[in-house]
Length: 271
Image 1 (tube, rainbow, N blue to C red):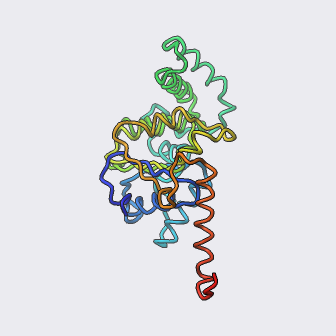
Image 2: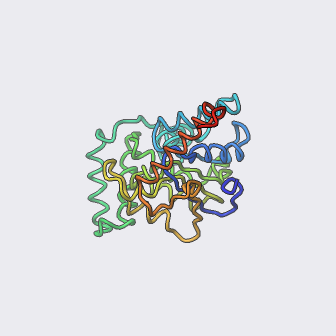
Image 3: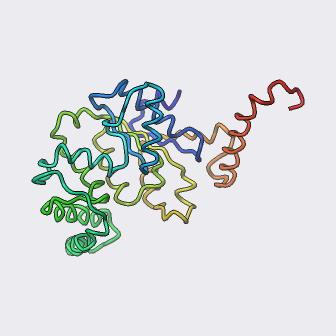
């Protein structure tokens, strides 16, 4: 209830897996949208499976289809946007989507352009220049890739030419700890023009997990920004974020087991 009622401009829902982050974001989205149609919010997911889970959750609650709303990964939403608004970004027709590997030569050419303007290749300015040089090359060929669609999503919202996009004032992003560098840049760009944003993620997973090639430095920059309010679902278990990933996962697992077993053992006084 606290999260759904929050009036803070930037919010972080910080918790481990299976504790309700996605459900909360879906409920916040539904409260804002009320029904499919005129878009008032954008819901960014980490992968196609997560997109389907959100769509099924909304459909289960409302018995309506939300397929055409701005719900999905940056690439999924970017594809929908460019089919409608490609001319605003100088495409002559809706771009053909190819793999990032197929555009690797264009990506390298854009990197060389960015190096000339921003020699510090670790800076945000370098990455921004690299991204924009990359999409400029693809626009001339009417091509797009998953990476370029991420960039173009932010570009279209930055232009805010279409009333449909200007009316979107709520940004929701799920499992942000799984986002890469370009996605975090795009997320920051979108956040800058929203009235309110809610990010959901797992700080411990972002900082300590090394198996998924995550980006802890940029995660910390995102969630430690001034004015962001953190809502820790983990506190429901009496476990702090500093107590380690394993203990958090254990708490989440045990809470789920307690919930599942409550129905089977309620009649047994020994249980």
